[in-house]
Image (cartoon, rainbow, N blue to C red; front, side, top):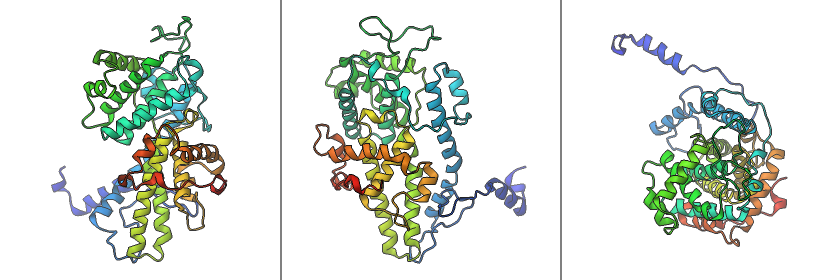
Length: 395
């Protein structure tokens, strides 16, 4: 039966059935980011048209986010669980990636500590590589998702351990012929690894990915096309072509929305045009500040073991603290943010303090790509924002 043959009543019933979702009971004080109906979510007297077609379209699209958000968190837990279980194959990973429930509440992944298994590398070498990748991403105007995926691929492949069930030999071994990891990288190969991982990330995230010639040029011809292509193949084979990984950017949209809706709730009671515009400006500043802190988080090796969602939550917390954003009760970490992130202050403290340390050192360090990038008007010069004293962080 075509839609033209259906009565108006039948069409309405079909629409209701499609839009019907089970009601969710949220804790008191938690904003509903995923409404079950298409309606205006902002009731204020500011005079702005929050119920315009564009606003309602944004509201409608946001209703798709709940299922994705829940599956994303399950996938992060399973990704951590799979790394602990060294016998998981690529095929079973692909089939059950979105189905297995989390069995661990641990916020760290010790399996990602790989420096002891990489005899030729140091944390400083890794930081230099990440700083160079950040500079490369800005030069070629790559998306944040591309940059973070490339950084994740670098860490994932360096953290590989030899699976005794694998019949294939390791990609490389240490000089003493003792197998320490599936992927031992020498110092002179590290930048080539970075080029290959960025190339893979570009192919997956960018509409017009960089070419291999671009990487030959940007690396000052340190590697030729064949070397970069061979390294790309080694990365893909080592990861068994499991190249889509969860990164801190994966959680950014939901956490920013939770923070933004808190701001609108705070100004909604006395909503004026100026207050709503101020909320938009605050959201833009917050987004750039969080992106700044997330890119800073790529540099320190100690954050490699932290879950991506925890790093994003810590970045949002530190950004809100730095910008002086509070909820209606004067708290940095609102009930909505605690609910949607799943982290409370105790969970965040260690990661926030680590990020804060690098935020304070960003201007004085030798690796200034992130600080320089976010000191431009394009990013509201958020890197110039004075970092708080550690005693003012609310812990």
